[in-house]
Image (cartoon, rainbow, N blue to C red; front, side):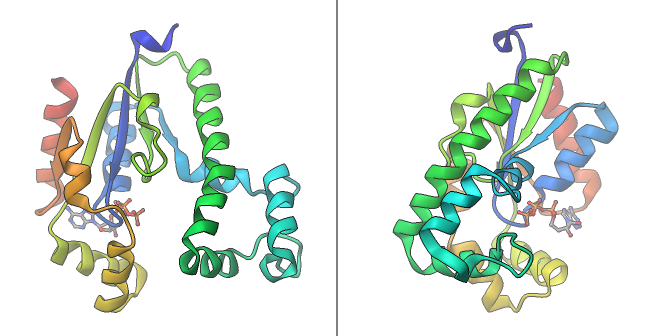
Length: 197
Ligand code: ATP
């Protein structure tokens, strides 16, 4: 089946707003296939991959763990402090992620597929989907959920949130906005409506 006939839902939002919660609900309640960009991004730097050896060539042993795998926190430190290096790394990984989505979509028979892509806008992957759903919540709640789930201080949570494209910008580009400011039942009810529209 051609992708043109499919409904391809691009699920995105800010860090800790509830993307995974929505994706899990779509999979569990509606048995929809969920493709996850984070999994492909990890695959891109799997041991033995071409991209991983390119990364080692560029940064040397400082980003290599004792077992030869990628030292993610060392790499994270470099890219957090050097925007140009972040851009270089993304240029390696984003095309790989795009190709993996295309491959998987060709295999799937389902008329509706969910593509969970936290960096949908930043990675310019909008063309992969036919509609964009943004999960949003108030900043205070986002900070509280990140504190609880990741054990961050409010300041650390705020720094992570502010290092991303703003949620307001994402909301402005959405076809559907899911507002996750209350309980799960309220969130799921919005998903039910969005899916039926
Ligand atoms: P990340 O960007 O870090 O991957 P995410 O957007 O996928 O996060 P989730 O993991 O779904 O967000 O949610 C963040 C945390 O908040 C989780 O611990 C989740 O269980 C909790 N959470 C999400 N929505 C609600 C809700 N409506 N009520 C209570 N807890 C919630």
